[in-house]
Image 1 (cartoon, rainbow, N blue to C red):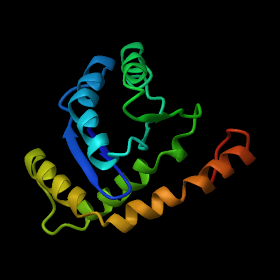
Image 2: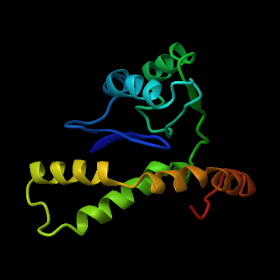
Image 3: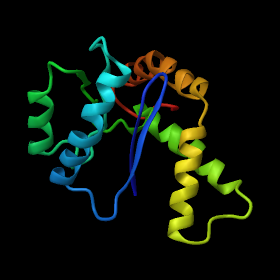
Amino acid sequence: MVWDVCSWRNMGPLICLETTLTGNRYLSIRSDHLHSFMPMVHSDGLGEFQQDNATPHASRVATKWLQEHSSEFRHFHWPPKSPEMNIIEDIRDALLHAVEKRSPPPRTPVDLWTVLKDEWYQLPPRHLQTLVESMPHRVAGLLCVRGGPTRY
């Protein structure tokens, strides 16, 4: 499993998760990686952090951390049961397709991790921008179906 972050312009770090993600592990990742990434790509403080409602993301410790750091960047409040709103899923699909096209394919976990990192940082910025630009349509679609499944 991996944790990742990106912005309009940049791919952030891709972090390999060796074990199950808990609230405390997630907090550590956010503290170590998100906290430094957001000011780097949004020096104006207008960056909006988006995550879904996965259990570690919604844990008390992770929620408290977001509240404590609310002056440093904004947090997009996630609609319940709306995974299709998360552009990172589209990015991960593109990453998977790139890995599947590799010849020869990765054969070991170490090879896979190397290929994942290589492909992650090669994703074109325009791909990210197209996904970010799709957010108003995604939100409108979600509102139309009153929080139900959408085509995204």
